[in-house]
Image (cartoon, rainbow, N blue to C red; front, side, top):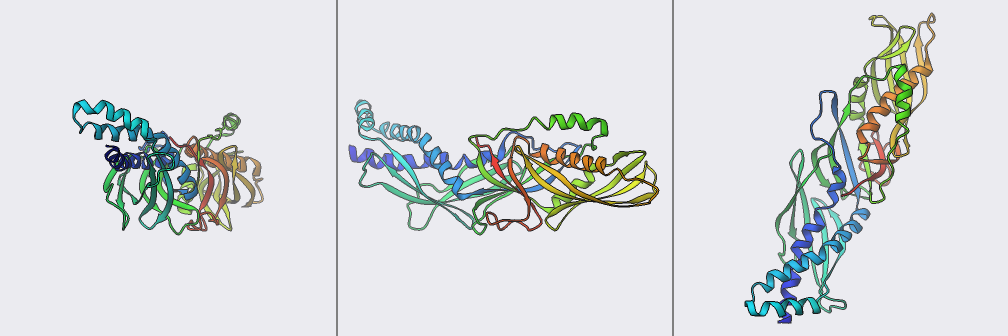
Length: 369
């Protein structure tokens, strides 16, 4: 009887553990948000990278939480196959003899999936623990759903094979998800479209109120998971058209604003005109540094160069403030509550060398669960 319990509980517990193991990492990418983009926003492409060394302890934590329920379920299914008169004492014996545990002994990134090795012991000092290795794969079903599947690696028993679960992605729109075996620390790359607000830039009178609102910043989530977020240069370029026209005072306006990446900096160019007149007085070029400030992505204008008719005095300070505020509103609000930013810089680094040299890279955390 004890041998029967041992065999069935070892194999019966594994599928339930795998479901618990696989269903958690993606919820961090998916904190509450809507899939639909409103008429006043446009989606930009982003990639969220999750490092391998952050996934393994998270998976182990989930295994520890789900071992008791998975074990009880497998024992219950096994005991129900016995005659009714034997079920009571068999359940008591199993509960007294067995103290199951499961350990994720290895998690490795491979092309096309994550190779997970799990060791299951029925009690402390179990001389014959079971080790099994599986390849976990992820595919995109639609803009909000990931299909998680698994198959045994060569030389391992076919304990679990085929689809395991579907996972919802309520933050942004899912384009694709893939493992990143040649990207430094990264294990997973989640490609998302994130909506950016296209509301008009604030007027001078609104700036004081907006700066006051900016003081209410997110606090770092103690359960958050380390991650990197890449915003490609092509996505940054779309921000310029959303800024609209800036009022600079004295009937001067800045329009046709364009954002680009040059020399490790953001560069904003605009036409300076009198009111709505088609006459362009000159061009302004601003060099902007991305900055992490109390968990939010912000920007700081380092300098602005101006070519303008000598008859006019260009209001540098007002222009710089409005460019900063416009970008901060769009970038900061789009990620607020979803990604806590610790560092911001242009270009890939040793942690995620697969990122583009002209992308904006954010280092930070994203909440899980």
